[in-house]
Amino acid sequence: MKSQVYFANLRSKSQATSLINKVGRLFEVAGFKNIIQPNEPTAIKMHFGEEGNTSFLNPIYVREVVKRIKKYKGKPFLTDANTLYKGRRNNSVDHLNTAIENGFAYAVVDAPIIISGGLFSQDFVEVEIDKKHFDRVKITSDIVYTPSMIVLAHFKGHSTAGFGGALKSLGMGCAAVAGKQQQHSTAKPHSVSDCRTCGTCARSCPTGAITVMKKHVSIDHDKCIGCGECISYCPDRAIEPEWGTKMDEFVERMVEYAYGAAKGKEGKLGFINFVMDVSPLCDCIPWSDAPIVPDIGILASTDPVAIDQASLDLVNKSKAAAGSVLDEQYKEGQDKFEAANPDTKGYMQMTYAEELGLGTRDYELIEVI
Image (cartoon, rainbow, N blue to C red; front, side, top):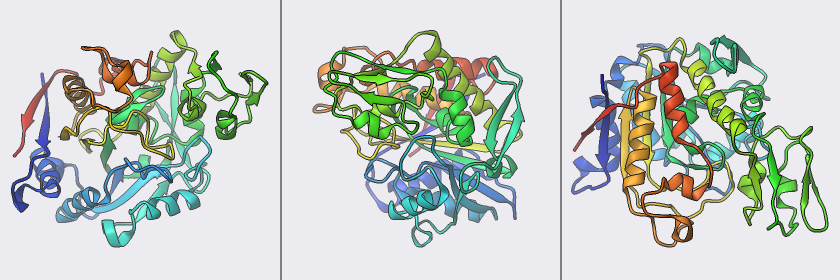
């Protein structure tokens, strides 16, 4: 049976068809009111953006979701979990300050922010899943104990997952730092011949696994946790993951974490993907490259697999954006995220998630005016 995915394009001819109102309309037609439990908390899981990044989700859209949850007597709060990598979101104090500086202040979004998992992401629940790679996964406690959740995802590229959407927001975004490390542990990077020894990768490494040599960098795989930050930070693409089975395992591990984050919330999850400012890399990096395709629209569904498949299909059907990283690398008919981050296997997110029963890749796209 096909899952329903609702789609709103970005055309607006009046206030009634403004993008803010379209977000509200998608909330209604997707049936998210049935997710909300009156007088109970509802988490709005999202990404607040790293300091210096500019492609993260606009807080004004988030405020509309807050408004709709309150309409149905829910108690909304914004949330995300701390990061594995170095940066301004690896502890709750700096994470919260970064969110506010990026526009997610109470005065703007009309809801509080709770960084899930405590000050240093040590507050988590081991959720039993009994899957291929994990028997249990470490999901932050605030996510586990909140009755319902709306997941807002800025749909964009990612240096190891291929792209980030609903499934990555569940799998990586709801995991405690220890869980993030478990997911990344199989994807160890190595340096290639184009290295100019600028040291950017070494400065980004959270474990000090990288040593800058005269003509290349050396990566200590015993220290490396596979977080992939050096890959994103390298200005010359001189660091690559070790692809193949290990990379396949990374994607599967992330999806198993998505399964764990969704467990216990059957019928109480909603997803909105914003396919706008489709940057080639994650919002975790402190900059934003030019979008790889023109802005497309906003999608909503209760099926994380279907919404990610629909979002990916829309991106791949679009023209590559002139002046973006795809200018030189994209070949007609190629997966655009694969072109932006060579050798990634983003499609595996949906195939494995469907195998686990998280949803279906078979969807009906219903346009909402």
